[in-house]
Length: 108
Image (cartoon, rainbow, N blue to C red; front, side, top):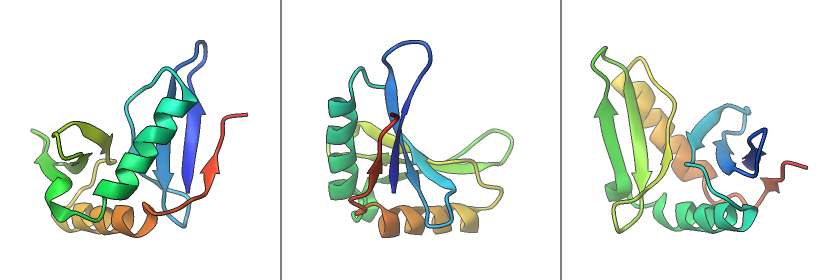
């Protein structure tokens, strides 16, 4: 499921992609409209099945995370931090599994 959030105060929106158990597995950048967020969700749905769109990263303190990118290299979403590389790979599989969800929870 996708959950669209609204920052308070202001009209800034982002989405979260949630796994079946409710944990956030991908978070988008901020957008100025719900329509822009919905368009970004469509892009996630197109790109999430392509393994070459995942950029795997490691922080200086040894945590793992990934970015999902589109064909132009723009970041569509960023994962949470993982303590292991295997956890990160499981996170990528969770995004692939859940990205085609048509369920979108709006912020109101």
